[in-house]
Image (cartoon, rainbow, N blue to C red; front, side, top):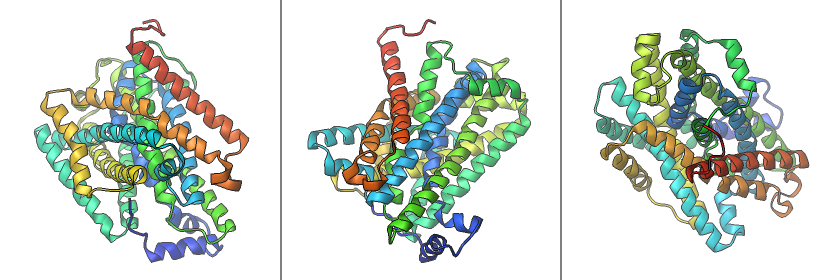
Length: 429
């Protein structure tokens, strides 16, 4: 994917910061962008679906899954950003350059299927927000969402910095919405803190939702995209600048994904506070919206829809950008943005036209994403540990240990989920 450059003013501001001529918040602001764009993938409509089910059915009991997924996401997004800064190549390009052709083809197909699952969640989420907010048929909401995201994608001709700022504004809108929701909802904070630090999976359904949370949080396309956003944003002129870029990149990842993590935790807390006591059966986004009105009031319901709409539109834009990068990186060509947008939208229209539950489709798409996640995780871990590719910047032993443990946890949950689906009862009901 050929991205428009950031503005010359941003480049100069970054160089001023690298050379010590900017301080405090003014030093950090020019570096804000890649992690903020990627962070929208961590609060997309798939998160709404899985988090609502987690909170309604299990109260605060699955908050620890959200926390664990977010910590793992921070680690792997930092590695992805580092890969782009150090090598000047993105993850998909490195796969094509260094891995056997048949394996690259398989990886590309898996990643394209994951991109379609991603777009299913994001596109349907935005359409649901529009349809419920303005009392429209869902298919009309889908057409409007398609138009909005397409025009946002066209705005990149003005340079990538305006796109970064637009996505950042939408992230801020979602954060404000959920801050208000927490003020409105009657949260039991001691129970919430207990759920945050007490790992448990009560039954098989909890396992499915937990894997869905991981799939909705650790997004395969986000791991590819981050390396592409950093690979040539501001090429370092020497090793000292490269080290500083890595430092600022890691700081941005921690801040941006901390915000995304807090929003995810807020989603579960809000659902637990509003639904768990008397509405544990709430499993649909539409039902959640309609139940919120009598439980917490119309303001809470409206704010919920505004956040869902902002999430769906922004994450759909980011997902299309990531799909372009993956295609160009793996197979060396790209198609017009409108063609890619059309192709990835088709499954969404088919699902809704067949009468499938939008929220059920969202949940299953997130489980599918979790099953595809080992592909970029293992590839990213391999390349960032490779001395010939990373040189002095290859992963340290503590980072390797943490990353391997995180990958094993994700792989382990996926194996258990597959066994469950095959009828092997790993957990008792």
